[in-house]
Amino acid sequence: MTYSIKLNKYLPLLPFIIPILCIWVVNTPLFSEDPASLSMAITFDLLVSTPVLYFLTIRKRTIPNTTVIPAFILGIVIASIILPSEHQYYLSQVKIWILPVVEIGIISYIIITIRRTFKSFKLTGETDFFSAAKAASAKILPKRVAILFATELSVFYYGVFAWKKRRLSLNEYSYHQKTSTQMVLGVFFFIIMIEAIAVHLLLQSWSQVVAWILTCLSIYGCFQILGILKSLSRRPISIKNDAVILRYGIMNEVEVPYNQIKQIAAFTTTVEKSDGYVHLSPFKDMEGHNILIEVENEMELNGFYGVKKSFEKLLIYTDEPERFLKKMEAVRNPARVYYC
Image (cartoon, rainbow, N blue to C red; front, side):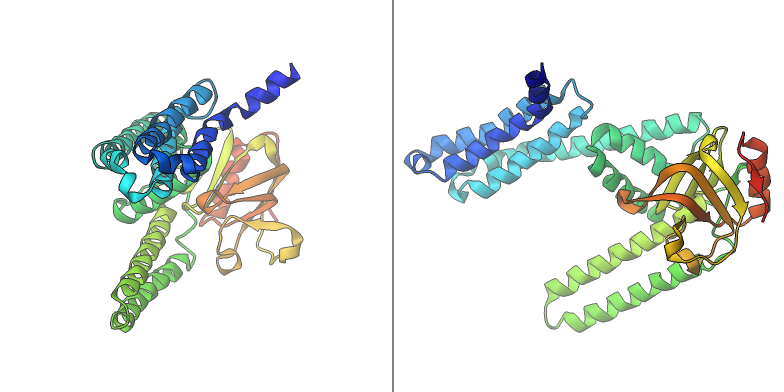
């Protein structure tokens, strides 16, 4: 029984034996004796046998079946590295005819999945794109890759498409209108733009490639800042029936059930880093805080690109602290509300 459990645990590693064997074969004298036939066999094993075997090992597990696609792409990468260029005929045919179809299929599937998820969110009254992107990505990608993809997609969405002003409902609370965060991010945005132009002009006489690489990175940085900036007004703090969802744009968020709240209080006291307080805002003291939420058990704050931070005492800022605390007092049970 114990042996069976251990074997079942390591079964998903079985498909990776084929790539290891393929790498070994390429580096033996056996390959040089008949490179044409072995190149075809290795290409087939990496691009067909490995993904099929991988699918068979995960189909009854919680791992998404769509992870077969990364296994297929990984096979292409490995084959491109280990096979001599003169023996990549079959691999090149796959790259020319099959890979583009797979890429179009992936993009189409992701877009359709996100649209369906977003529509289902709207039916429940939820209109948050980032939440929909994370839910959709989790269905088709591994957990760690899903949050990275959802973050990048949301940065692009908020930066490019989210121009319409969002009206807050009665249970939603803004946190950006009375702080200097928007101004600071705006200043950073224009500094990066000006710096990108200056650096490009300075480096283009030395290396056009380096100049354009740095310029593209600067443009990407501008998109990130713009996406973060616009997400602040579109991802408010929200009070639900059984939990409060604390957000700071797409950078930080956590859902705190009411039965986990030990105390919630108006709190503007300056704190030290060693006191164990965690800020919802990544800008911390630069933005300030006016509410403290202390939880019964340690929880995790979900940060940018899935980075997590544990907390028991969370400091937040809202533009209407009194209205927020009154609403929390009305919906929360059995925790108490203190006004300090």
